Image (cartoon, rainbow, N blue to C red; front, side, top):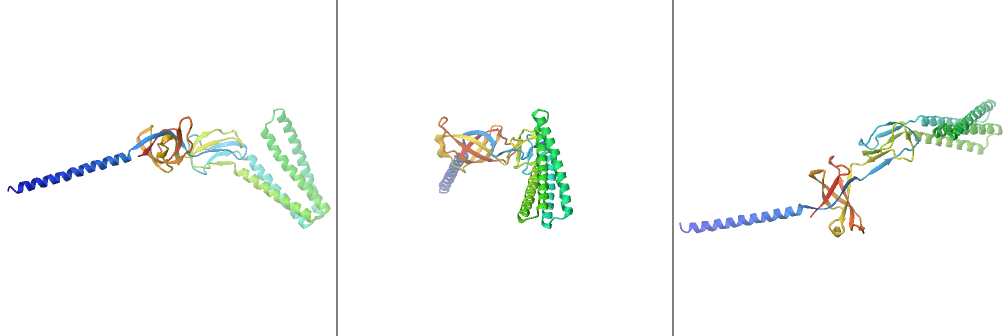
Length: 324
């Protein structure tokens, strides 16, 4: 019985020692783990969109409909502005007529002139000449009204297009008449073929302008600015709508220059936002400016945030923590 007691005590002491060592080891590992994953917040900045697109019109026309407003979500290719395309449609029809005339002239040249063709050509020339004269008189009248401040420049631009078309048709029919009277040479045929090509090119251009009557969003994102209203004139040199991308947000943070050796491109960071104190977000360093600001002694560091949380908004203040 006396031998059993000491052996039992030794066993208890050994087990107690092992348990104590395991507890101490676990505490050390927990302490190390906690120290490793705890981020240190050493940078801060505002959340911004990584992409912003200013959208303009490719043609000058009046706005007939606007499908979005500030805050509207859009996808790439979504229609955002519809323009009044009546003038553009007229230009397409005029260009189509120009192609038909040019092709008819070529057919006549290739087939040779007959007496009835000359009669028809003369009638076409007389009609084109009269039309050109009428349009020219109308242009002169509107031009004078514009100078006097009575008519708008848009009216003048419209009549200028009509004048150019009328003049082209007059020249085309006149050349056709001359060719019928003088006979068709190889050089003449080449000229008529060139006229056909020019007419087709004008038609393609008019059709392209017409297709630009519907303005589409080039990117997916949120409308941040709207600088045009229904009924106003959209010009080619003014921003109509601005869209900011929401797929990727960034923080332009500033790092003390003495800590530049603590960061590198691609390094993962932890982000906390003052407006959402109960959550943290993940990101990574995408850009490190190699130049230190001489006044603040800081370095610009861009941090990318994958915007998978709709709670994150542009303008929010964010702190950047390094996992150390």
